[in-house]
Length: 312
Image (tube, rainbow, N blue to C red):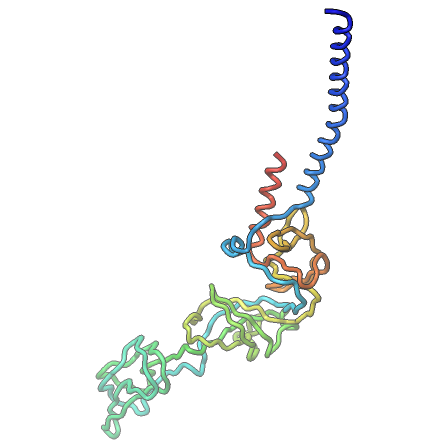
């Protein structure tokens, strides 16, 4: 190998080494910068991508942020009781012998129906004992051959109308009055009605009793059942409110998930007063923002899962 050929090869190798070093010096910072940029985008763009059809299938419901009214309530408890006007204890008009009994315990009767026949001791004539209104026979004390002698022969009740009997304690009396709205609840049944009257409790109990009438034609409010009442004691108009179910705790803050197209992302909010259903939003949202109103925990869970995967 002559000197010219050797010098040429050495020059070629030197140029290759210099180019390789230059490439390493230049490309490494660029690639690192691009990686950092991708990580920054992933962190800033905390959102869940979900089509409308999938949201519907998952029952993720949305609604617009709006102004509204909060109904501040006080909780009271009580029982369902019989309407006094819908119960009757039936006696014979004249003393005599019960000669016939037509009904039994639990039978449904109609107004004017003959319950029994009594033969008067004085006239020896028979006369009917009739139902004063339609209802159910809840007690029977009459048997053929017995003397009526002024005793109660039958008790009839109609449970189509019943009352909520609610206990009000001294600390609640300043907030609750007649004609205020009250929402009653018993298991899955709910009913909005009004407090009709408030009376002292019998037997010098340390509370008064509030009564609210219930339409019980559905039969979902049985007499004796324990019930809860939410009495509306005041109303407050607010500039923005959302359902309480929309609020989630995420990354140490109270957030609402806002929908933009098919993207759902978290927005921290400052909250104010609340009632049983809605809560006031002081900042973080705008009127007409579309937010997740039901099953927002599904969005939260998806974001937390994504973050867990990103950390690893």
